[in-house]
Length: 219
Image (tube, rainbow, N blue to C red):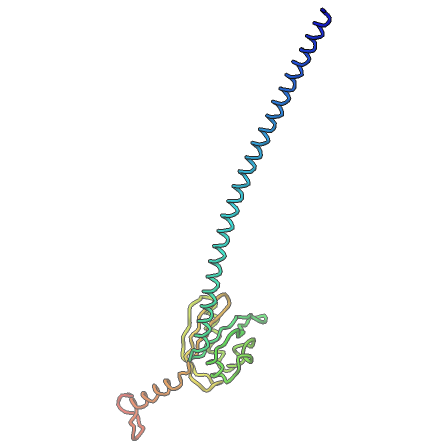
């Protein structure tokens, strides 16, 4: 009977220890599950935050893209308006790029853009002007203009003068200004009628219209 009782106690002890071990193992396993779940929740929250940040960034980029698109459209429209104004100007207008050649760094102006009024003034097509030097078309006038153009490139100060061009046999009102780095914009107006009218007025003011002799105002 003692042996049976002892075996009974052993059995109950084994069951008790086994139950405790199983309980501890289950508790440890549950703690691991809880920690893993917490990590998963934290990772999920981080992913949600990252997703929201990406969504906000995407929206910001979309807004910036729309703004750039609007600015591009506005710039294109502005260029179209400028081109329309450029093409419909009644006075000659050209844009040149400064080129320095030779040991003396002589100034040459390579024509990059011309309007129809310039074509009409020189009786040349745009394709025959663009890429060529400005002095090629006004070789007898270059000494009157190039020193002033060089000064514009150095100082940025605009230049205006009325000159007589032997190449065109015309009086020209020349206005030039810096249009960018090493770039000049040149505006030319045929002022022959105005100059000749002024000369005629001066002639009438200082000479007798009948005898063409100097009158008293000439002295």
